[in-house]
Length: 343
Image (cartoon, rainbow, N blue to C red):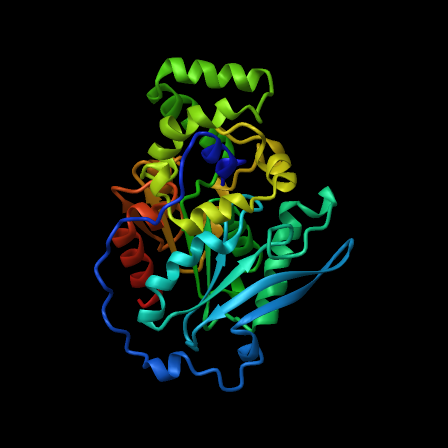
């Protein structure tokens, strides 16, 4: 997820508009509409499925926001957004696909994100505590090994891998979306593949801004949006980016994002700079789907390699997609995801 993107887009003169991509309607679900939308016995029915879940931390109790959509006793998907500290909002694209397949799913803003509590304490924004938070959310939502699927996108993919290694007995399935298993490998890919492919004059100017630590300079995003984001983050003109994506970026919490991800938009640093679980993928023994994209900020070959390290895992490549492949290669992404969930 990317820092100050909406502000920079406005400064560059971009205007928000709906995404124009059309996708064929998915096949009818075997679950009836009456059963899928039946809220009988659901304590969250009065609030439209939304709940604030209490989370215990070393610094006290806080609350995180979740929202359930639908009912399916066998398939319940918890969505882990990227960032760190973006929001669930860009996952709203799921509304166009998962209900028609009878799949129950949960939106969720992690602690520090826009719809949840945002305690100003850096010690809370560490990977092990986030893993514990996901476990507390799972328990509160009543998800278990017979129905619990965890989908993590980008930073959420890091969190999903860590959760699968820490709590495999609670999972029915895992989806790692658009995330490599190593930040050092990601930084190497950015340095050796993505940066050389950029206009070198643009890259030099971007590097000069970064060297001065002038990250709030509007010119920084004016350069990166057409030369990097529209090629590798979401392959549409920024003026056509879908409203849920723009809303999620606008709500990004920089106080968490920058210390964890780092200030540069051409690589990662911060607390996550040395994170690497490549050697531990073989220890993930739940059914797993890895989703990558040809034009992703993440190396698609590395993500395919990941699927071969996880016993029995499968891989979906979105040939027309980028980091937000659920938008710019929807048919491939959703067909692969739904097929895995209903297998």
